[in-house]
Image (cartoon, rainbow, N blue to C red; front, side):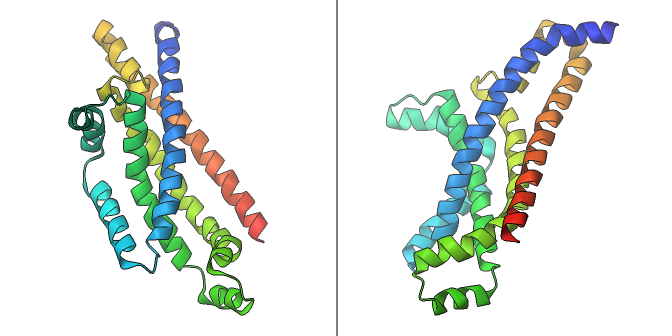
Length: 220
């Protein structure tokens, strides 16, 4: 009974935090996907300077800490530019740009994995490069991208647990606040955090699997 009483006491606050976590995750996933596609396609540009600039972006964001990027966007950049960046915006930018860098490699490698015969067939039909990419290459590459994008999405969800450090009242933040009020309930609080993160992660996993099946059927 004591366990159920603890759950009833803490769950409302944790669910409020979970909603914030979901909001950050969805917004960041949208940004990361857009960045991944743009950067991934630009990596295939015939212009060396464009490829070089994208490589610099990818290597910087993949090679540095997400936490440092988050702090840079929230604490350092506003001081340099004399502007104010809301915590939600900083979190979305840090997560979106970081995981977008990883996603760009998924996009690039998936496009390159499309058989050369598909390019040749499209060229034989006198398709322009843009039309060829939209109608022939990307639909096939997308099927290859989805599993890796699904993994990145789960990693991004888990990465949101850092945003409480810039005062966003996400799931982890709510858990830490509850812990300060009653540290004797620390095990129960963190068990609830684990369960809620797992539920959200599993929901995203199921959504990605559904998208994979639909994409595979559409291709077939």
